[in-house]
Each structure stands twice: as structure tokens, then as C-alpha cells.
Image (cartoon, rainbow, N blue to C red; front, side, top):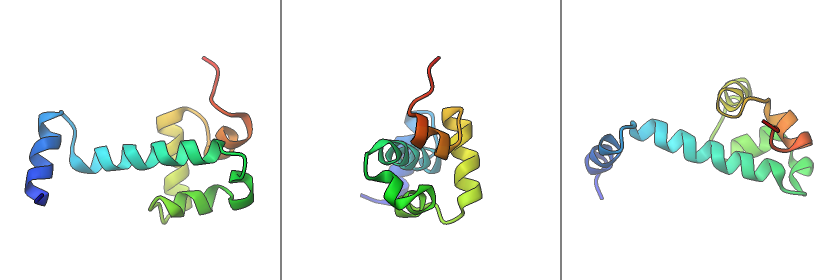
Length: 81
């Protein structure tokens, strides 16, 4: 599958390929942060594992997506709305 074709597919869904990939990576991070063994690794390690090299950038976009910091998510779980 070509990169061009992937871009076309994501365009049909109304998102850019980069946005879709970032969303998928954030979802993986959010799940990993809730796992019992996550505290052994810490937020930065989990973020790096899913391709986020910059911790402050990861924290900022995680908060935008989930409404809490990655650490608060890890400690308290999902926010109650």
C-alpha cells in the first residue's frame, strides 16, 4: 500500500493521516498508562514506546485529548464526567 493511497483513505474519513496516526498512538498510551505495571515504567517511557520523543509535547497533546495530564490519568484513571 502506498503512502499516497493511505493519504487518500484518511482524506475520505475527514482527517489527515498524521492526525489519525497521532490519535492511535495516544490511545495506546492511554491504555498502557492504566495497566498495573505502568508505574514501573513511568509516563515518559510509555510515551517514548509509542513514538513520542518529547515529554512536554506528549503531555500537552495528551491533556488536550483526555482533559487530564498523563500522570493524573495514570494515577486516577479515566476522568469522571
